[in-house]
Image 1: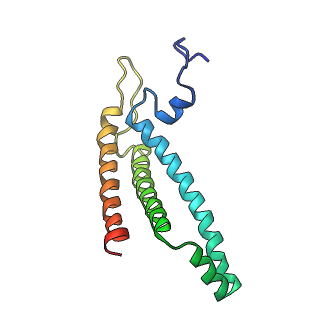
Image 2: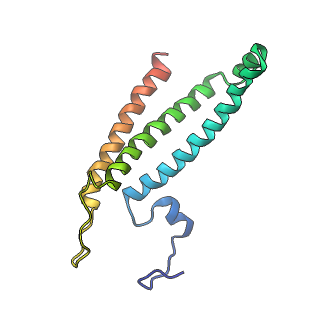
Image 3: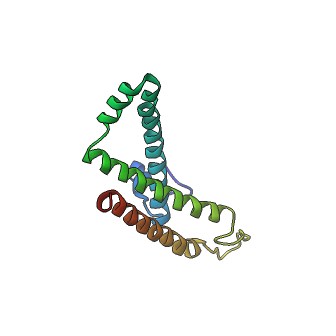
Length: 145
């Protein structure tokens, strides 16, 4: 497959997952996709587990007994970390798409200017905020609980 410049696309699936030559923003895009899908799967499993409540107290107790233990606590923490990243990155994307974070679009006149220099500090800030919230959440999950 040829791109518009005539160079072959040799990245394939690795370029979609690994970001290829697009840098940090592409990694954030891929991670945003994966965390969104993971949260959707968790939401569906959560509905299945809590639907046992409709079948009485014994079914509820049996359902809750199946989802206890250290493996499930670690899984709940991963869901929390995915939620924190997905929410913070979603706010960043909304700010960028609305033009509030990087300014209004400009006329594409040569020499072209890129918005990467304006987006990169915001992306790094999102990663720092998500990491801090994940650490605080980890304290609650593993130390204070």
